[in-house]
Length: 133
Ligand code: ZN
Image 1 (tube, protein in one colour):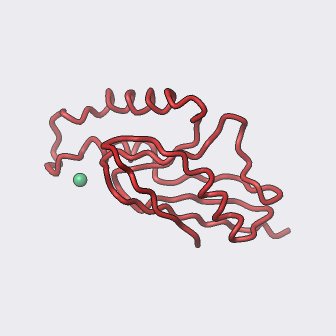
Image 2: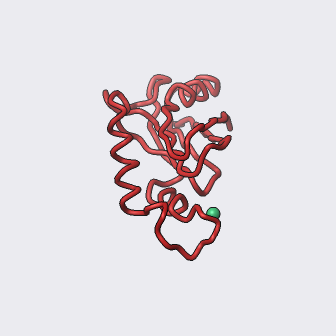
């Protein structure tokens, strides 16, 4: 398994990690298979969506803020209940197809790390599996 660190520097932010994931797949030498990307944390997440226009990520973060406002009343008293909820909604894994050593992403798709309770240093794990015929 490969992985890398992500240093977040804002309370909430989106970071494009596509290049780092591609480096992990290249290092594994996988030509044909699947790739699982996982974060071992409870207040961040991974999505696949557009990042060419960064306002898309801002709209997603704003929408999640409306669903789980940071200043709402929650049972969890650590002060980051909203971040746990957003992490649950977004999910902590993504799975993608690898063909000819490349991630099969659509034209506008990028792999985005979403921080909901930063700034922190986070880990991302990448497990690429070869397809055997
Ligand atoms: Zn907490």
